Image (cartoon, rainbow, N blue to C red):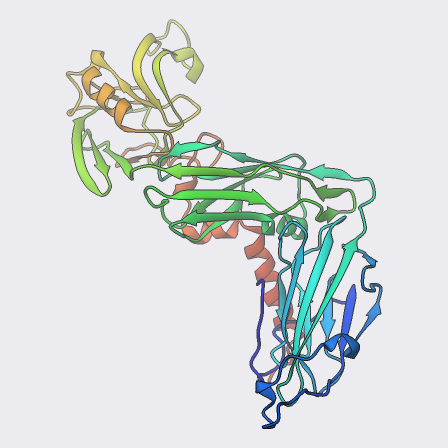
Length: 425
C-alpha cells in the first residue's frame, strides 16, 4: 500500500517488523497548540520538528543501506503515527504497513540503490493535536553487480483479447524469494481494470494473463520498477522499457472437430459458420484454446517439417494461401481447396483446420494476432500451455496462480504465521 491510516484504539499491527532497522524516526509526545475554546482539533498543526529524533544508521540528509528496511517508530506511548508516505525522486512510492495502534510503520517493498527519498510522517498526540515531519535521505550506490533487465512482449500494437503479456529476463532467477522480488516489481495496469497474475514459465520468462480474456478495446500497460532493487548479492535491477498494447474486438473462433464446423463470434455474437476439415486419425488436431500467432498470405507446407518422411504415402509439399498460424509446430487455419468435398463431412487433414479459399480469405481478414482459436471434440491431445505458442488459457485459474512467486510467497508466510501462533488447548 502507498499510504496507510489507522483508527485510534484499533488492535495490534498486522505483521512483524523486519529484524534489521534502516531508519527509526522516534516521535515524542508534543504539547498541543490549542485554540481559545480548548478544542485541539480547531488548532493549527504545530511543527513537530523539535519533537522528532533520529536514531539508527540514517540521519537527515544521510546515506542509507538500500538492502535494509525503512522503519518509523513512535517512541512515546501518548503519541501515534497517523500517516507515512515514502517516495523517491522519480515518484515511486515505497509500500508499507502501519500498525493498527499507530506505534510503528515499516516498509514492505525494497528500497532502490542510489536514490533520494523523501519521508513524510503525520502524527497526533493523545488529545488529537496533529504534527508533521519531513525527512530526506539517499541510499548508497550498489557495488559492482550485474543488471537484471526485462524485455516485455509482444510489442506495441493492437491484439486480440487472448494475447498474454510476456516478460523475458536478462538473467535466470531460480530462488523463490528472489522471484518474488522480481515479480513484485512487474506492474500491469489496464483500462478497464481487470485483475490478473504472472506465471513463471521458466527461470527467465514470465507470462501474464487475467482470469478470463482481456476486455475488448482495453489499454494495457506493463512496466518494471526493478531498477536499483537488489535481487541477490550479484544481481540488481536495471532500467527496462515499458510497453503499452491495446485490444480490439472480442473475436473467438470455435472449431467443433466432430461436427466439422468452425463458428466465429465477434463481441459475443455469432457472425459466421464455416464447414471445415480437421486432423484425421493419427494426425488429430490439438484440443483446447490457442492464440493466433501470425498471419501468412502464402506459406509453403512440407511434410518433412512435421516428421513425415519424403516419399511416404502421407508426404506433401504444398503452397498454401491465407494461413493463420496457431502453433509454432505448424498448425494453421488455412485454405485447403483440395479437400472441399470433405469439408463439413470428414476429417482428412494432417492436423490443420482446412476450409475453402474464399472462407479462408474471410477468416484471414477477420482475425488478428492474439485472437482466440479454440478446438473441441477432437481426439487429439490438449494444446500445451507453453513452448508451442500461447496455450496459457488451457490452465485453470488456480493452476495459473500457483505459478506466481507471490502466491507461493504468501502461502509460505501463512505457514510461518501458523507455526509461530500458539496452539489452543
